[in-house]
Image (cartoon, rainbow, N blue to C red; front, top):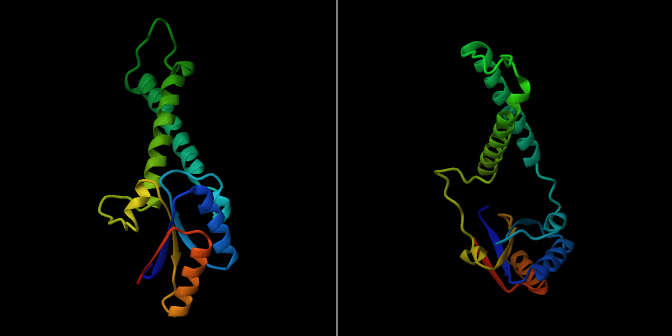
Amino acid sequence: MNKYITAYYLDEEKLLKGLKQVKAKGFKIADVLSPFPVHGIDKVLGLRRSRLTRVAFIGGAVGAIVGFGFQAWVFTKAYPINFGGKPFFAAPSFIPVAFETTVLFAAFSMVFAFLIVSKLLPGNDPVIHDERVTDDHFLVIIDVAEDSSADDIRNIEKALQEAGAEGIKYKA
């Protein structure tokens, strides 16, 4: 995004109402930044459901297999010890550790997937559109095409003002 217009809102209800008005006028909203989750914003923006649950399931399944498999290998091949007459492959006793590795792997897979998708890995320079977003403002970012005229930009700004935006900035 080289050229974009940002508009901030102070209230989440005004934000949702303004987003609907701006979308109805045919402008493409590139992103919305918020200090906290806003219920219903994904439907207004037309976002599809997150794939993070699939990543968590796959990570958890790998964790369960690794946890169970490691215990099975340790207690049957690497270091078989007879604990109170129990068989070497005592699968019910493997369940607590397998469950914990499931949770651990699912959590780590979600964290890494989130960092990769949101481009928050070390070494990336984040673009800070407006520092007030981290406090109490909602920011709408509208991408402006490279070949847009001054009239197009004024039309977008006018639509944002009509939609209840508190402040509007254009960045070329």
